[in-house]
Length: 371
Image 1 (cartoon, one colour):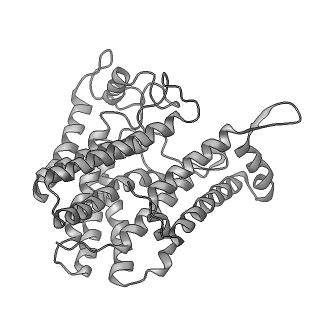
Image 2: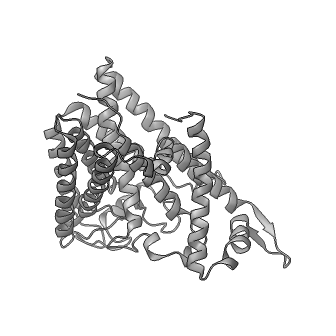
Image 3: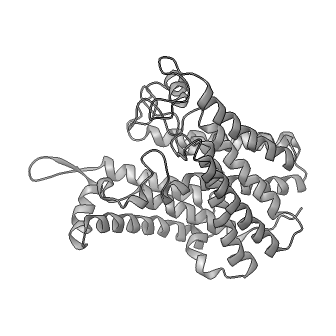
């Protein structure tokens, strides 16, 4: 198998990081454009692309990294131990971000974005190490059908079976048993990165690994791009049809959502691949490539810096304390744009460029932070 590095994969990863930093850091949450917010419950917006793209890209990358390690002589045990170590570090990093700045272990949120990425990485890698590509496809379908079935057929005490409302569903019930007091602060009774909803997220990673196998075949690059685009449209059709039976829902990571977002992932990666690895048009994506070379580091930095801006307060003339983020937004952005929506977006773009500045310095100095 070939182990060449894909320019398109680095750029797509960077595109995803830039997107996550953009949607995570508006100047005002109440004045953000709807397209830059998650769907309230059922349905989707472009913001709902971001998280599954991270997991999907991780699956693609894993196919390449494992092939490289096998080529250099690593055993299956060595590979698995490397996966466990990396997953543990990513999980603990996410947990530490949740702890900052209060370090209150009694109420700290246990799940999170990096935690889910770590679990999906570890469990999908375990499947990859022990099953063929065809068997992995069976695992992918099986996980999605299993999750769909239990969500509709397993009854919840005092509620019954088949409920898919906020806090009234099987996933929320399982979270309430195992994660009470350690869930997302906005909900408190359920978590969007909870236990059961991680099952179809593993399938999202396997969609990525299957894409990686396609990219490593002996097909021409033009054929690979065509197959990704075809498969992407097929997944959109299947996910859209499945939406009639199980609504597309990011918070529950429904099976329809997993398939639908895998479709978008295939289309985006297919488009990046055709432009960059088939046609050789790479200069246009330099911004994203620089981000993609230090994706985890820049993502973590964006969270830490924003936590600092929210924790650092300034005393106002009326004696009230105002977070430094709000001070910057009110002074440097709010007065200079035609609407609060534009000022909120301008803040998010400026924050993104600030983080990119760090990524650019790291790139220029050839510093690539890997785990």
